[in-house]
Amino acid sequence: MTIGPKLALRQAQSLVMTPQLRQAILLLQLSNLDAWSVVEQEMERNPLLERPEPADVPLPAFEGIPRQPVLPTLGASRTPGTWHDSQDGLAGPAPPLHERLAEQVRLSPFDADERRIAAHLITLLDADGRLATPSADIAQALGFAPQGTGAARVERVRLAMMQFDPTGLFAHDLGECLAAQLRERDRLDPAMAMLLRHLDLLARRDLRRLRTLCGVDQDDLTAMIAEIRALSPRPALDATAPEACIIVPDILMLPAADDDWIIELNPDTMPRVVVNSALTLRTTLRAADRPFLTERLASANWLVRALQQRAETIIRVATAIMRRQSEFLAHGVSHLRPLVLRDIAEAVGLHESTVSRVTANKYIATPRGLFELKYFFTTAIAGRTGSGDHSAEAVRHRIKALISRESDRDILSDDAIVNELRKEGIDISRRTVAKYRDALRIPNSAQRKREKAFEA
Image (cartoon, rainbow, N blue to C red; front, side, top):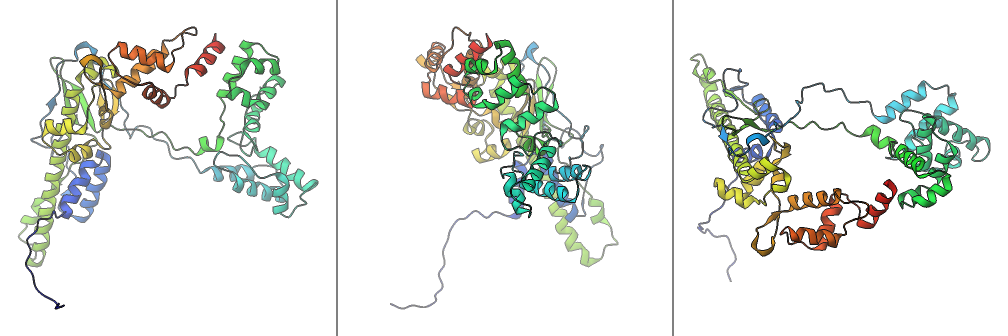
C-alpha cells in the first residue's frame, strides 16, 4: 500500500450560511423591539442607513405589503383588544434590597457594634428573606460571647431589623415572618398567634381542629385566614421581584368595513430604515472611497429588502393563523381549533421552521385580548363517533368551566369530568384530565370538597 498525498476531484452539495442569510433568519425570529436593536447596530456600522422621516415610509409597513383582511365572521362579538405602550409612565428601578436595608441601618439608633451586627445579618439573608443562622452562632462569628449578652445583643438587633421595610425580613421561620407583619398592623392577638403556631394544620385544611385550638367560630377563622393570605410569606423575594413586563404587540388586528378585520404590523415598533443613496452620487468622493461605499450600499439595500420580506412573512403567517381560528375570535377559547405548524406552513407555502421562527416572540392584539402567536397552536384530542378533533386548550377551558360550576354537594371527580366530556364528544382519559387540572392549579375533588364545606 502506498501512502502519500494525492489530488482528487469530488462533487458534493452543501448549504452555505452566508452572514446575510443568518441575519435574515435572526430578524425573522425576533420581536419588533428586538429587531430594532439589530437594525440600530447596522446603522452604526453603515453610514448609508438612517431612520426614516414620518413621511418617508408609509405606515403600517413598506410599500407593497398589503393590509390583510381576515374574515367577515365576527359581527357584533368583537371587542377591540387593549395593549400598553412601553413609553407610558415607566418608573425607574428600585434600589437593590441590600442597599435599602443598609440605608435603614444608617438611619437607625444603633451603636458601632450593633451596626456591625446589622451589616452581618444583611449578608446572611436567604432569597426569601429568612435568617437560618442562630443568634449564638452569629455572635461567635463576630467575636462576641456566644452565650449571654453576645447572643442577646444579636437577637435584639435582629428583632429591630424585622421591622425594617419590607416587614418580616430576618425571621427564622414563616410563622415569625407573618407574626411581624401582623404585629405591625396591630392584629397579632392570641387567636392569631395560635393559628400561626399551627400553620401545618392550615396547609392540610384541618379547619375543625384549628377552630378548636384558636377558640373561634367559622366566620372568625375565615377572616383570620384571609388576613394571613394577604401577607407576604417571602418579603425579600417580593421586594426584589422584577417589575411586570409590559408587552407591546407586534401585530395589530384593526376593524375594517363590513365587520371585517385587518391585520398589520404595529407601526410604532416595526423596524424601518431608508438608504441615503445621495451620498454615493456625490462626484467629489475620492476614488478610494467608492469601493467601500459600493459595498455599504449593497448591504443597506439588502437590509431594507430583508426587513420588507420579514414584514410580509409575518403578516402572511398571522393572517393564516387568525383565519384558522376565526371561531375563537367570534366565540372564545372554547372554540379554539387544533393547529400545528404544518397546517400553516402548507397554507402559506413556507417551511415549518420558518413558521416556527415567525411565531416566536411575537404578540398579536386581537378582539379577544393580547396573545402570543404560539398560543394558537395546540395539540388535538380525538372526538368520539367521528365528531372531529378538539383543541387541548379548549378542553382545558372546558374542564375549568365544569369545575367552576360545581356546588358543595356535587363535587366532580376526575372520572365524572371524563364522563361529562365524553358526552360532549371529547374522547379523553382520566389521566389526561388530572394532568390538565394540575396545570390549571385546581386541587383534586377531595380538596375541593373540604374547601366548599369551609366556605359554606
